[in-house]
Amino acid sequence: MTLAISRTSRTMPSGTTAALALPAAATLLALMNYTAPLAMLTDTAAGLRAGPTAQIWLMSSISLGLAAALLAVGSLADDHGRKRVFVIGAVLLAISSAGCAVAPTTAVFVAGRIVQGAASAALIAAGLGIIGATFAPGPRRSHATGIWGAMLGLGIATGPIAAAGLGVLGGWRAWYWATVAAAALLAAVAARTLRESRAEHRRGLDVPGVITMSLGIAALLTAITVGRAGWGRPEVAGLLALAAALLGAFVAVQARRRAPMLDLALFRRPRFLLSVVGALVTGLGIIGVMSYVPTVLAVVLGMSALDAALLLSIWSGLSFVAAAQARRLPARLPAGRLLAAALALNAAGQLALLGFSPGEHWWRMVPGLIVAGLGSGLGNAMLARLAVESVPPERAAMGSGANNTARYIGASLGVALVGTIVTGSGGGASPAEAFAHGADIAMLVCSAVAVLGAVFAALVRERD
Image (cartoon, rainbow, N blue to C red; front, side):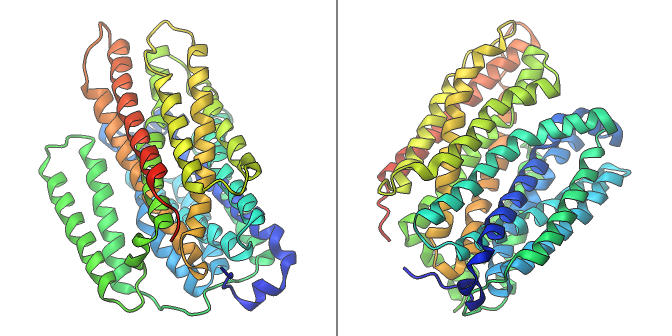
């Protein structure tokens, strides 16, 4: 398979360092920003006078922007320039972060977080597209996608810690000012050092596809977010019906266009199916439940936000290490089999966390966090590899967008599922015990999802 990129990118290999370092740094920043509110939710809610329902939006709004924009910006990057979309994403992240930093109300802050999500989508999709367009299939690409995947774990690990540390120095708004500076620096360096690449044959802007897909995903995630305050509310049913209609229209539009934003024939490719389903399972069965661990630690053990973030960094830190070292695995091992092993490790690690109750020592969680962290890192590396190798070379950013859209839709569903189970399960002699009981049920459900994903990945034949 040949790599179809622009002539400029093919003939200037000296740009490969920037083509890996900047997308990796952007993904690190995007994931740190994604998880930062975990450590500062109480202070942020107090500063904005946000009630319980508004606090759900404080946490979920960035996922709405991410999932709604990823596929669209990935397609735009392939057709109109991956560097261009990457730089625009960095600038937009700086502007939206400034909006969050000065937000006087919850509504302004939530709007800023949604725009942050769209900006992060541009960085993630275009960044992985740049890597796919720069590094030919083989060991060098495996190394590059492994480093990129490692940034997911490192960002999750360091985001809450950095936000909590800055919060001690300058309050909850300090993180967003730091993001402004980091994003502005990223935009400036990318504009000077990255080389432009795009598909040799442009498909043009699929306006009906962009509108129906983005609005459909936005309606779905809004329904999930609103549903966390009560699934029987009529607006939830209305939003779900609207999402179904819009996403159905998107499929119909894509099936009829000669040059669609998302070629539905890709779903007949086993690797593409692995990429999308694996990312969805990762979001639903892993990110959703692990995102809730700091809350469990706070309620069940009374740990501070910083202490909980530091404990969770065992999982996310090992995820970084495992993804970075995945390149050392024999090239003959299929990505699908490795993804299956990763999901199985995650399930085993999560099952080891069962039975945690008030009064126990936090050391009891360490073995499970270690096993789950190793599985998470291996899975991130394999999903990054599948994202760029499962699509035609000139569609690398679109492949990244499809993969990460599935990941963040799954994460939103996972967080909503875990929250509903934990708060509605009952049981236990005290609120802390009831919460721990609900967390056990949620962990069992998410582990079952991961096991099913592992079985699926193991059974799929990777030949396209």
